[in-house]
Length: 578
Image (tube, rainbow, N blue to C red; front, side, top):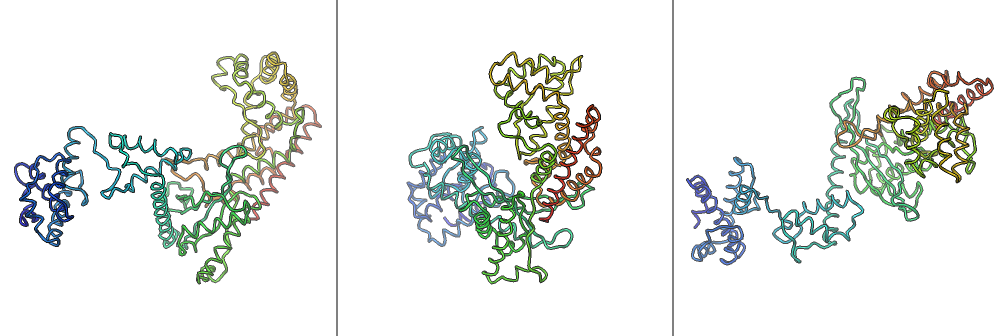
């Protein structure tokens, strides 16, 4: 039987007139040699051949001659089948893996030719769940965290039917502990691969020939609502990768790969607990060589967040010393210090917040009659959110179909203290309709508030009366213009950051370029506004010129200048962190 399994004899089988019969004969011989090598019987071999729809079953006499060969002889002959598969794979689309029988491949190919899909296998030959199947389940659970492991049975049955076309037997079910074990193993593999990515990148000098560094971003977040909300700490590290320069104004364009290092609850919700968690996950996920290139952290502008960044860096330096790698604490003979940056969304938001509060003051809790533009935003939202259908129906009757098509229906925005551009967007919405007036010069808002008073007899009737007065108050309208125009300048920068998703040409969070926001965007804007506020608030200046009362006109100008100065001082205070 040895000569039949030689490489030359096997190639001759495939080069005959009836190639299908040649493939089938080679497959039968391969199955027989592997069965004999594993100590199987003729019955087991023929059961395998029958399951693969092979009509050529092997006779006991022929199998006995194969089983009489020594194991080392069988191993050498089985190697010829691997060489045959390599030879076949050079000229065909559907590749044959070494661990797959030729008959299996032939059976799948015939099914595919008949319009049937390939039969997928959930388990390997030892009965274990395949890693690629576990990877799919992990992806499902990671992208749908609300599923939970309690849904595993239903999910497994649905997945099994979709892949194999039949329902699983009792022995084919996978337990929750099995899937947990696979997910833990896959996570460990991912962490190792990510760590090696850092090592690979840190060995390469930057495009300017300098040592390469990487940074991180961190913040606290809450998941869930009400009293059951879980507070977690998020740490994201970034590797910079050069890409082809497509922007002639930016000579150093970066493509940043963000990797989530942790999203866990810290032991204590302060800078000490968060820095301990940062140190723990970075030591576990990033090799020591790459960790020596950690440059610092980008967080919000809170005092505790900056303290967390400093403590994380100090603990990593101590880690180098404990590992007898104390020289990693120094760069060019100087003890390293961390970069400690505040993220740009907070920078812009704080500039606008301090400008607004510095010019107009804060709202008084519970005082709905307070003459304040942000109180107008909140009261307007309170009325709108109770019955948005009636609100927009009345607005449509006043505007008419042409203006409704041009301006759209109103979408209420809640007044917020520290939410990015929320108040500015609400001010823009307010001014959009305020500029529409009837033949007598009355604003759409006044007409709408009077109309809605006929609908309500509860607390809303009184609030609408207050809104009518405030909608005609030049002080409130001036503040709406200032709030809106302060945000206009930062909209391009918001769009710059908001390009995210897999189809974006740049990452959505540009932590490595945050310093450009200070020196080339925020400071020049505020310096120009301090020198001449009309240069940055042209629409506000136009409305300012229409205020008839000179006392009110001078008061609003001084208030706006005070707000610009407050924003300038806040920006300068944040810049001290650089």
